[in-house]
Structures are given as structure tokens and as C-alpha cells.
Amino acid sequence: MVEIKLTNTRTRRKEAFAPIDPDRVRMYLCGPTVYDRAHLGNARPVVVFDVLYRLLRHVYGEDRVTYVRNFTDVDDKINARAAETGRPIRDITDETIGWYHDDMDALGARRPDHEPRATDYISQMIAMTADLIAKGHAYEAEGHVLFDVRSFPDYGRLSGRSVDDMIAGARVEVAPFKRDPMDFVLWKPSPGDLPGWDSPWGRGRPGWHIECSAMSQALLGDSFDIHGGGIDLQFPHHENEIAQSCCANPHADFARVWLHNEMLQVEGRKMSKSLGNFFTVRDLLDQGIPGEVIRFVFLMTHYRKPMDWTAEKAREAEATLRRWHALVAGAEDRGIVDAGIVDLLADDLNTAGALARLHAMARELVEDQSPDGAGKGVFLASARLLGLMLPGMDGWLAAGPDLSALAARLVRLREEAKATRDFAALDAFKAALIDAGVTIRMNRDGVELDPSPSFDAAKLDALP
RNA sequence: GGCGGGUUGGCGGAGAGGUUACGCAGCGGAUUGCAAAUCCGUGAAGACCGGUUCGAUUCCGGUACCCGCCUCCA
Image 1 (tube, rainbow, N blue to C red):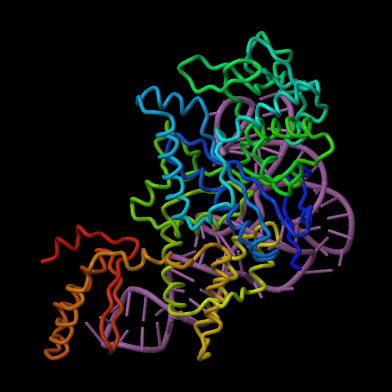
Image 2 (cartoon, chains in turn yellow, brown):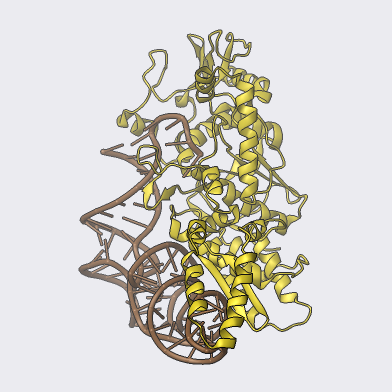
């Protein structure tokens, strides 16, 4: 069996991975709050975990991995969206979940085995909250239930900080009913116009962190293998999850391995609305940047490093994918994956290294004359382990504009030029096509035209 | 202020204590009526200062700069 190594945020080391149950790998990823389209940064952990999911399925068996990713469908941002639009909350969350599925599907991300909605697990959250009160780790105050961070000595261990240090930093919400400024909400009261559920502490709604503790327990058990998300979630979200789950189940491990991806930047700067460089996955797809290209750009950078989204990278990725698709056109994926690719991914998800390996394989394939195309099949299967070149994912290659009329004109001009030995008109036409971003392939047999990444239909329309 | 990450050739971006990363761009060549596309080849690096070592870009310490988290955030 291939040994998978992962960098565990909890221990700050790269460790050999071994599932608690050798026959079942269990992983949990913190999913989106569903009030709007997923922005590009939201997509990074999805792609990172999708590669891990594919790797685990490859190594342990397709039916031996359980992947859970939640939808947070109770949240003040959702409430605010409902208030400003006058729409029912359920409409908003249902619509947003549909968008999320569309957009993540476009990136080639497999759907997780379970996608629980927080609102379907309210009773479990109430039960865990009550249990934490009973065990002396939480207390009720003015209709709220708060977790008592001083009752959990390990609080802060994941993120390497102490309660005292954080208080010294003094950026904590001031609430007079908290015993300690770092105490966080497990349950809070809901007025009549907000979503609420009956509880022992009155009508209310859960705090943000408790849902992941309750849902992971319900679907994966008290102890499971891998828990992940963006590094920004390390504190406070994951710290609070650990506090809740470990106090509720003191004899369990909760999550063994914590995996955090670094953040995304855009053209070297943090993506933010104020900088005007904020955009969603859908924005890119609508601009004609294929999901496969977006994924490729993500894979170019190791998940533990900040990833910079740039137009130049998208251009490079698209050109590479076009070449690879052409290279293995018609090849058959027989499920045989290159061992080098597996080893690279097994080494803490070295996706950039795996892409380099694919480049090397592609170079060898150019000279591969084997009649059965076995090498190309291996290439295809290996790319698919990265979630690239999946069945149906190449639609964007053919989805361009119809250039057949232009191709016919080019053929005609070429024949005329060869007959007359006057190439001026032909050359002018080719130059215009290239200027408009059309890739030209000419040989004895004929002419092929394809839009390149710099394709500009307006320039074609301007052709005489 | 506290915690954490980073700094590699023109650009992007990996691994490895000693041997070519790789991709893009550039340059040279093949091919072509000429090109484009494709293919082949190729120069170019390791922020700064110390230390360990026969040998460090790779390990250790320090400096500088950059970034993230500590507040909803992936």
C-alpha cells in the first residue's frame, strides 16, 4: 500500500497517514455558508480536498472513503440577505446550494458522500450543547449558552496560542455575561423574526462552531481521520470545534489529522471587495475560463502556500490543457495510473510535482508509437487522479465559435496562391486570423482553425 | 502586541545536503512557399549575514522584507 504523508497542523509535522479503521477513511471539510455565489477563494479547499479524496479512493478503494462537507444554512449573513430581499430563507439557501453544486461540478470536484445541512442537525446540536453544560464546560447566561474556554486546558493548542495571549491581543467581543472574554457562543436567542428552534434555553439558534462538531459526530463518529479547511479557519473555528467535541467526548480523538490550505490572492494582492479584485467562480466561468483551467491553476501551487490567481497563469494552463487533450485524443482510460504521480500526490499532495510529471510523460508520449496507445491511457488515468481531463470535461475545447467558413476561405486562398505564386492575399488573411487569436494548423491535408486563449471575435467581425 | 507562513533563474513554481526539476517567455534548430501550430535543443536561480559540514539553495541561528490569522471570512 502506498504510504500517504500529510502535514498535520495539529503537530506541525508531515506524518505518515494511517486511518483509525483500516477499512474506512473518514474526512470532513468545512463547507460554505450558503448566502451567495462561492468566490474563487472558496474553491481552493474544495479542489485541494477533491485531490485528497481521489487519492484516498485510489489507495484505499473507491467505496472505502467517506467524505463529508457541510452546508451552513443558518447564519446571520443569510438572515441579512433574507431581510434585504424579502425572500424566504429556505429559497435563498436552496438556490445557493444549487449554484454551489453547479460551480464546484464545473471544477471537476466530486460531490462528497454526505453534504449535511446545519438545519437538519439542530437537535444534535442542542443535545451536544446540553451535554457540555452537564459536563461543566458550558454555561447559560442571558439566554445564551457559552463555552467556558477555561474549562478546557488544551484550548488554543491547534493554533499555538494561549487564552492569556489572546486576551492580551484584546480583540475579542465584549459581552458582560461572558465569564471569560474568549468564551464563545454555542446557542443564542432568536427574536420572532429570525429563524429559531425551541431549546431548553428558549427559542434560539446555534452558534457557528457547534454545527461541525454535531454533524461530524453524527456522520463520522466521535473520532475520525482528517478534518480540513482554509487556514483562516484554524482559529477560532477549528479551535472551538475541538473544544466542543473533545469536551463532549473526552475519551475520543475527534479529528486526528488537521489539514489547512493557505489563502488565495489575486494578481499578488488579497482578494477583497475594496480592492475591486473580488470575483466568484461563476464570474470566471462566464468569462469563458473553463473550470478545468481554473483547477489546473490551483494545482500549480502547493496547497500549503499562498496561491496567486493571475490571468497569465490561466493562459498557460489553458495552452497546456489544449496540448494534452490533443495528445491523448481517443485514448482509453483503463484505470492504470502512473506510479510516480501517485507517489507525488501521496507526499503531502504535491500537485505541482504531479503536473511536472505529467509534462514529462507528455514529452515521452510524443515519441510513443505503440499501436494500442497504452501510454496515452496511463497519461489520461493519471491526469484524472488530479481531477483533470475527466470525462465530459473537454467540452470547452469544441465550444468555441464556428470557424468553418473562415477555414474554407483560407483553403481557397491557399490554392489560389499556390497556383498564382502570389501569396500576398493569403499571408494577409493569416496574419489577420492570428491577430484575432485564431490558432492555425496547416498541412498537406487541409486546414484547422481553433480559437486560442487570446481569441477576439470582434477582430474577426472586422475582417474584410 | 500575540501566533503562523514565506523570500528560488525574466515570470510561475517543485524536489533533493553533493548529480538536469518542470512550465511559460527568450534564443537556436526541424518543419513550412513564408508563417502559425507542433516537435527537438538551450542559457539563466536560490533575499542578506553568520554557523554546522569535505561540501548548503537544501540543516541551524540572526537580520531585512512580504503575507496571513487573531473580527464574518475558505
